[in-house]
Image 1 (tube, rainbow, N blue to C red):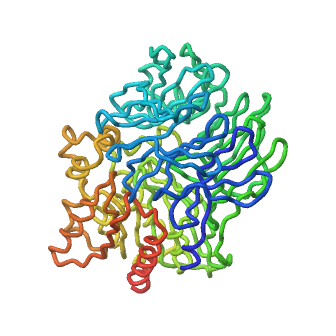
Image 2: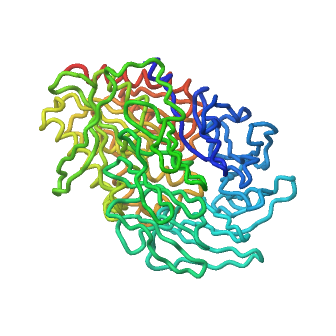
Image 3: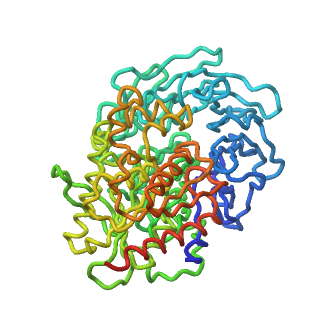
Length: 590
């Protein structure tokens, strides 16, 4: 367990404009910090020291500076910092610790940082230009909603991406230097327009306008729209540099990375099986103007590593995973599997077994991803690896509502269809027993964030499954209290997915696990960070208190210096062995 927890990887990439320096984040020191390393070879250098952890960051157009966000205790109230590219002269550019700042880009001259911030109202994010010289920030774009990306064009104009009713339906707006603005996208159809990058006088975006699966499209400054790459798989990563662009296809959860250069589309070679590391804050794909591609590459059996492919050459390992002396035996061995749900729909997932283990049934933990628009994909998760190393199988389902399969599949759990995804989870547990993969009495369930709700829903609304044990990590127990206490800016986006807290109040009450705790038979462990702005810690407190008031034993781990999940290595070192021991206690015997 100690070695598994000490293994470290790298993710959240950027390349210097000349392609000679690679930037990445790693929690090698116990918290997420920013590092750099020469692409041609050399020793990595830690750049950030002043911050509890690093969020999004951007390298300036001339490569001289790096702007980044930093928060405290997992509260996600990001402050904008700037430092020289070698890590020196770090200083904060903003001082509102009660607000959130998202670093999104630089002005073309490198004299100012572009950042979204909810300064005037906690619910709304406006775009600001923050000068490095300490002058007063300038409001560029006022928006009564959320938006987390803006792309500065070489001519001084800016393309702003804002969310509509949900995060995967977006508008693009062109800001002129004189302050005027013009929308580039229509109201209908409502569609994805994400990852905007300057290209050919306009922008390249990921868009599913007019199709089920997201592809690559060019949006012109006049609002013209045309797909330039439209494969039969979802495109879920994109980076652009000059006339070149790189993208990744989602192939059943694994990634196939392409480079388009001088009109030729080629697959980046030299990579082991895996996928681009999932990172909700930064990018796992980076491209330099000379065609150099950097990739944060994830696998189940090793922390994410960074590969770099020079033009015309296969990828080579530049930042290897820190394996902490782990041997391959007992690490996860993956298999892509599928089962039929209650309505005949096929549900995909990954089944992980201990490498070299004997065949036959073994206790199995069903691990549910968050989102809900997430996707189970190859990724080193120390808790998952520890469960497998302890002798458990782990099933990671991609129930309806998961990303990676197109908008139609992702919409199958919206609002009043919510519980259909819980039935998919239940069907997965039934399949494990029927296929002889796990004894029916030795199946547990675990999930974080939305996966925490799914865990609570499984043991509440599917108690006849006789779940052997369950672990809820930062999960939702009551939709009523969740909507009342989640960060104000999140409520409209969550309402589009989960249901309106007023119009759909009765339905939301009918699917809140807190209201049906008497149905829970499974032993339960609950884990939460005290500073969680997304799913407030009260969700954990009330499910624990309610069960304990009925004389039920609940294991509860509360971390005062964490937010939405466990970001600090010391807290994972405390929690994850307890989770493994909890499942060993209840799944080890009939």
